[in-house]
Image (cartoon, rainbow over all chains, first blue to last red; front, side, top):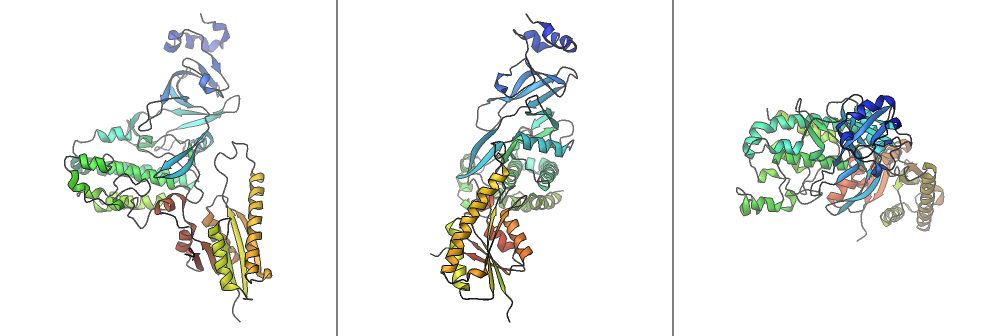
Length: 327
Length: 154
């Protein structure tokens, strides 16, 4: 039995008719201090910025190869007064070593950095939107609008059956949209900020206009001499995926019905990723019809390249020329 | 009379950097019209530094102490090799909002150094992509000054 006298008067009718509260076998708790986010559960209410958000679920870790683990610091919420859904990010500091091709980079989960990115991008069309507030214990809580869209990789996988059709029918437009989103990353870098976790599932394709929008800015990394290198690495990987419509490792080439051992034997170490050494970046060996200017950009990220990109603006300039050549 | 050679040597506590010092010592020992500056540059602290309770003044003090030890050892090496103590200067810089190589190029310009010396670590291409290479960056920017990139003695 819920003791309604414990809640602010204006909240009671909202709570009484909310589907989550109706299902709950306990009284929802109101949290103004979110420090111990693991104790904040389904049906509880986060009260920040004079707003009441009821928790209707939690987001899950979407990293490839990892089971969908619940992220208790990222609840899905419903604003009890404006009837809108949001995602809230609570403070969770985490440091870990990222290993790429045997090299270790220290990564940090940084609410402060995400708050700075949100403030910088405002309502920029190529980023998720939101704002940050302090709870009563001065935790930096981020209130994020939900991007109504699909993960980029899900979106791409549904375009055309054959790769050749995809390249001729869809790739020019896909890359045009990717190019404008790359400009967004350039904006971050110009302001001394990184995205921090550029991956193909950290771009959402907006359902309303098919625009590519970056999400999740709370990772940071420490590379004092090449502060934006991991963002560049991520952009190279996303471009590889967009052009190849999937990633190709050695076994994928061998297993591919139209490639097999014959194509595999044409590959050299220099055709593979410069940093990770696994994926094939010289896609022209797999798909000879890929335009050379696009493949040349990919080769900058390959082990065989004598030059690599030092900035997103260099990458963007080459991509811009290559995309213009597709039309 | 020849203009004074102003040599800027990037130093830290590594053997790579002391190899560069030994190289310079061999070349300039006995020279009078020369100024040798030992430059130590340190980066901004890691992103979680403040969240871990770090205090910038403490970090800078730690880096100053480290630079002091490097300067002391470096000066001793140069003097023992025959470089006059009076021509050696030191400079410790905090690369705030800049990379180490950007700060190095800035110091070079401010001090109008004619030659910049760095040791070469010998990193892989992948390491260079992720972590950078000061010697390569310097080589790309050395249009109006001389760069000595000192490799292995092997």
